[in-house]
Amino acid sequence: MGPTLAIRVYKFGGTSVRDAIRVMGVVQLIAQARQPLIIVTSAPAGITDLLQGITDHATAQSAVTNLADRFLALVSEVVAPSHQRQLSALVGRQLEKVRAPESDADRAKLMSLGESLMAPILAASLQHRGIRAVALDARELICTDGAYLGGRVVFDVTTKRIQAAVERALAHHGVMVVGGFIAGNAAGETTTLGRNGSDYTASIVGAAVEADEVWIWTDVDGIYTADPRHHAAATLIPEISFRESAEAAYFGAKVVHPFTMWPLLDSQTSLRIKNTLRPDQPGTLICHEPERRGSQLIVSTVDPVVVVTVGGYGLVGVPGVAAKVFGSIAAAGVNVLMISQSSSEHNISFVVHERESESAVSAVNMDLAGWISDEHRVDRISVIKDAAIVTVVGEDMRGRVGIAGQIFSALGEVGVNVMVIAQGSSEYSISIVVKSADVRLATDAILNAKGTGS
Ligand code: ASP
Ligand code: MG
Image (cartoon, rainbow, N blue to C red):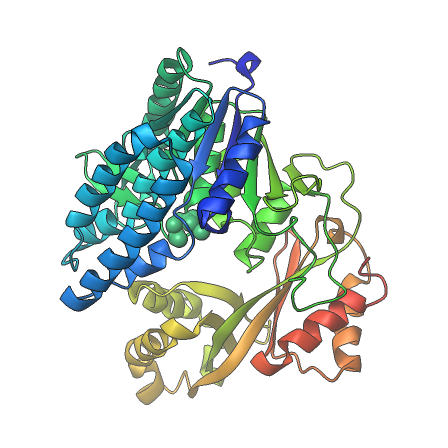
């Protein structure tokens, strides 16, 4: 499929399709858009949470009532009367299957219901508006292996399937609607891309069809230097590189899912963040070579986290200590967010999500027990709770002398204590750990620091 088709992908998040009024707004946006267009839709806001909350018979019962109310209301308001009976029957059939899940395979099927109902409803509402639209089944497009929930995408299969399906659909339709977040495995079972995975669907589809742009329609104007709801000094970033936005997203700038950038790294496709409620705003363009990036630093946070430190004089000069510590964490299935060891080698600190900290600490305690009791190589494993990672990201930081100094002086001036520091040699970001209670103060101090460009 050549780029001459210039397909564009629009992805609408849950808040953009939360109710009939929002869906009609989305239909309006699509009606004005260039075709061919692929729409990736999330479930209406709150639906996936509701599905995830089903753990027993009682929660399943009340969820079915809730889901039926919301989807039937949508059908009655956004779809042509002649189509309503068919779609209401689809809602009924799908909801009949809702019960407490017993396996991850069941869970994936259950969690996919929101998107798998929303895609045909949105397609029907576009048809009602006179647009030649068709819903495609995401399970037949996006192929994953591994876990049922958050499986790995098998890109070669996925790309071929998407290209073939889109080519077929384009013969008769200008707009194709795909449910985000849902996928299927080689055995034809339903899987998911993990919570908030619809953005990822959009970029997978965009890369497969060599779209010129993938637009992520959401409820904010774009990527800011920090969360604008909490920081008056935060400013909108008009253009940003893939690498930088991936790094910022990973560290908690929650505008797009961190995986979204991956499929586009080797493509000509760029990504644009747009606000459904303020479509005339330019948003943020994520591309390979931003022309108007400026030098503002982005401050994002991960909170709450726990710092675990393994310390002892016996660690100095002993090869294999890091391998032992991180091997033990990996075996416990815990994800390490940040690592720091100074060259004195007396301590290795690592940072994990608070929810995983108990598993991490008991794993190292168990695996290092011999080193603690017999050889006295390790004399403490200490834990700092109620901590937060503050990451400062900026492409422009690379090779810019004095940035770290400005960041740390700013923190010093407002009395924020820095507990751990890490900077990768890519120099795209510096991560520091502070007390949770200091996060807002630290972020404001960095945003307002002289030389950080805001
Ligand atoms: N509906 C799914 C979720 O809430 C996927 C998404 O919204 O991106 O996780
Ligand atoms: Mg969502």
